Length: 195
Image (cartoon, rainbow, N blue to C red):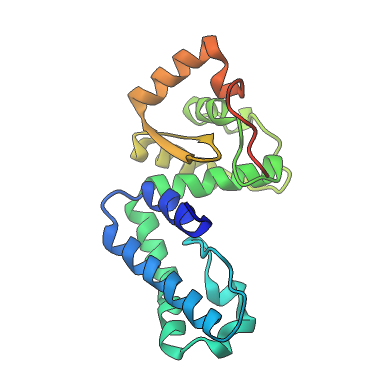
């Protein structure tokens, strides 16, 4: 699976029932890639739904047709609507922020259990990681707690092939119980992710 397909698959796996939005973004990425390569530009191999082409690649705006730029201008609002409809997506973004602040990584690898316990405890001061960038505020923590309830389960990093996956609460708790003897969630048997 190429990088573009993997990014889009992982993102939309957390947004059940959003096939039309997925197709829209896939077409946006394909059209953008095509427009850039037609001009001889070595385009990124992947466009991430969480980022905006307009912000990250302003040097290429002049070669992309205006209608395509308009579609990119529409994407941030569509993305925010997706997040509002899909608490798993927003939870994933907040976990990403925790990974950035605690490990300078895209995910808080091997901290998923500790973070879930921290959220469920209701004690913002019992943070199980170092917040190097000052991401965690009362509002951030409250939003995490709300999203945890709305999502009805938990996210964890499975491996480099599967990436971040969601388990409904019963399955997540089962994995936690099994991990007590195997050490899987603490990293035993789970290869370290490339950072």
